[in-house]
Image 1 (cartoon, rainbow, N blue to C red):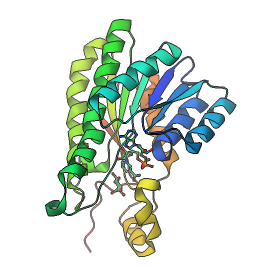
Image 2 (cartoon, rainbow, N blue to C red):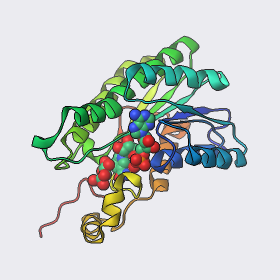
Image 3 (cartoon, rainbow, N blue to C red):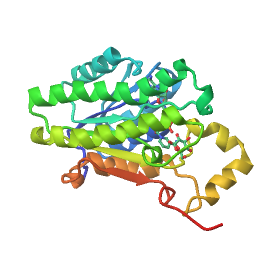
Image 4 (cartoon, protein in one colour):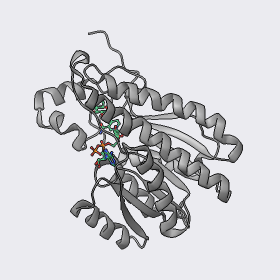
Length: 256
Ligand code: NAI
Ligand code: BGC
């Protein structure tokens, strides 16, 4: 049985990494897909071919989600593509490494605007549509274990994901009367381009892995499986939650 038959999903920042895996997973389960990224390139082309091979409809919309008007427009454009939208996955995100005292306003703005402001206005645009069209929509935000635990040298990133934690808690209450569910997924350390420096540094990578109870980096498919659950009717009674996909990292503590 296909859980997403006749459903349409918009997945932001889906050219690569976790977003691309979410697009493929939902398409495998019958969903039509709107992809998004800053720029359409060969990664988007390949993903479109793969999703078409699965027998699904798919398109790619360019947008820079660090800007509120672009975020709002992306959602209205996505609705116009197939005339409908059921699922919004706010996946696009950036991180910038710097000690707190060295964070520039430019990097702070980039991180907060992409990870929090863009998400806020994508949701607002989607909710306006769901209310007007009586769609029981569902929203999934790609948060992080760092909505909860510290990550030294990534203060703005943690602030943005901490903001997403409360945005989701708050909107679960505000949107329930419209039959709209909203949840966060909080990945731990997943092998994607955002972690390229770590993946290239064998010694550091080993330390990270030793701190993860399941003793491995996460795969993008580990995350997309949970996203698919939350997007589906299997999660019909789940709203306002964060699902950790972290191999046990968040609540791990060991006496050395
Ligand atoms: P990634 O860097 O491969 O993917 C992020 C995607 O977002 C890229 O395709 C990028 O182009 C897109 N993006 C960034 N800014 C954008 C903007 N202004 N407009 C449109 N698209 C934009 O990294 P990954 O790992 O796939 O990250 C996806 C999400 O997962 C992010 O929100 C990240 O914070 C989150 N995450 C990742 C973890 C990991 O260990 N890989 C762990 C926890 C959370
Ligand atoms: C960050 C990754 C990091 C992971 C675990 C994610 O939010 O984007 O760089 O490896 O958290 O700390």
